[in-house]
Length: 161
Image 1 (cartoon, rainbow, N blue to C red):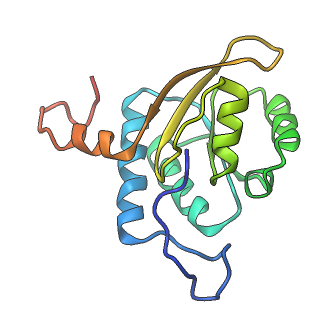
Image 2: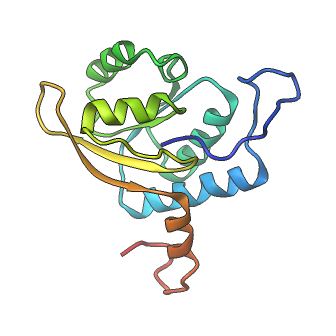
């Protein structure tokens, strides 16, 4: 997942300190509800140590009650080899990465073979096809799709069907 919409400039003047906007907080909450409705259980949440990704991941943690919620420097630096090592060591069935462009787009292209316009608050689903690092892209969703589903008023209690 790419982090939700963030402010252009932080109070402390650093890129790392940029926080989510009010719209970004709403986007993160919408995506978190959608992921919960998919029945995602026991997923680890890894996020870049930058504030906007931490806040986005916190929204996911609140909805999904993930057993692992931790910062990964590789998501901020683009060090894919380090990220892969951590991934292999975790033995998690599902890992949600909350990061930044251009790294997420490059990694999706390398793993899944497709170039996607990784928008803010968008989610890409990949599944490992084999232990040799080949992945299948299962889907790519923008936050607006999730928002439209939750505002249809289908009496599903927030469950996507």
